[in-house]
Image 1 (cartoon, rainbow, N blue to C red):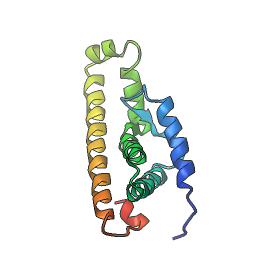
Image 2 (cartoon, rainbow, N blue to C red):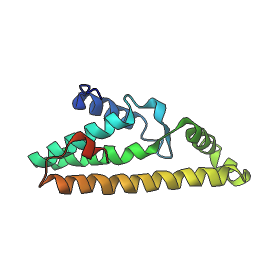
Image 3 (cartoon, rainbow, N blue to C red):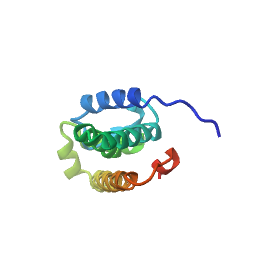
Length: 142
């Protein structure tokens, strides 16, 4: 296994700018828009959250936790296409009229909500454990 250098600041800067640009798309964003692989963004956010916590920087910590949770909104293209169809300007009408679209759309929304919950639990667990242990990048990804 080869190790590659990851610039956490650069990753988080580009990801943060993307979140700002796409904040209106809360129902799902195509993961192809991510500036880096999702795993790299996760690692960068976790590492900087741990650093912010160690420095007592609550504002930076909150930003990293929020960014980590928001990764759940980035979904594969096939799911994004369903969300996009349902959330067009006339999307609400499509959801009501299309018996197949409605359950698919709401299933994706449930998946996003569940992933957000899992991410929140995971990062809180990591931050609580971090106080007493040094964590490797492999532990951060679990």
